[in-house]
Length: 194
Image (cartoon, rainbow, N blue to C red; front, side, top):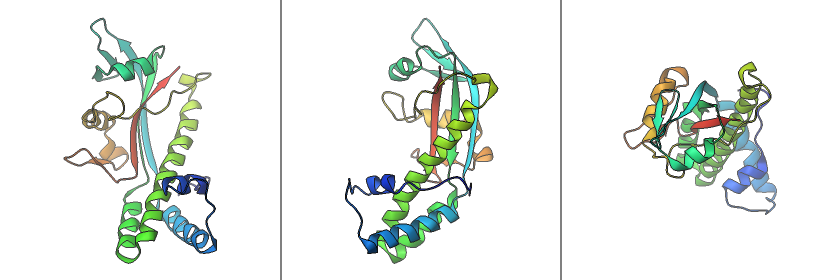
């Protein structure tokens, strides 16, 4: 696990739908214990490619080899000459840990899921800092991560995006027949630069 990754307890509590409530001593101990176990089991990986964005006159556009027609994503990428095709994961060990917890403690399983969700976001944020450090995008900013299934970008786009990234080999991310990413704490996205 990357030494500089930490779990933001506020985000974990938000994923647990606890709002601004302060956890009591017993829950704090449980959050700490499960959080440490999730951090220890995480094997984060990520892969990305910087690709040109080319708009065509027929309403379609390309981000590298991906030919797209999402109006929402087109608006999101307006003004971008480049975009990153991106994927990241915490690895299968986090899923295995959550399964083990589900057999012994429903509460610990929920906390593991919430911790994993907060941790994958932290990992992606760290990766985005690395993207911004690349010389090809010096002085630019990144748009938010736009994932298949968001807005009018079909979830089926996931197949082509992960194939283009060779995500199974480069990051260990697979796609189930019903388009769920495996490991579950994985993210794929198109990130506009500009």
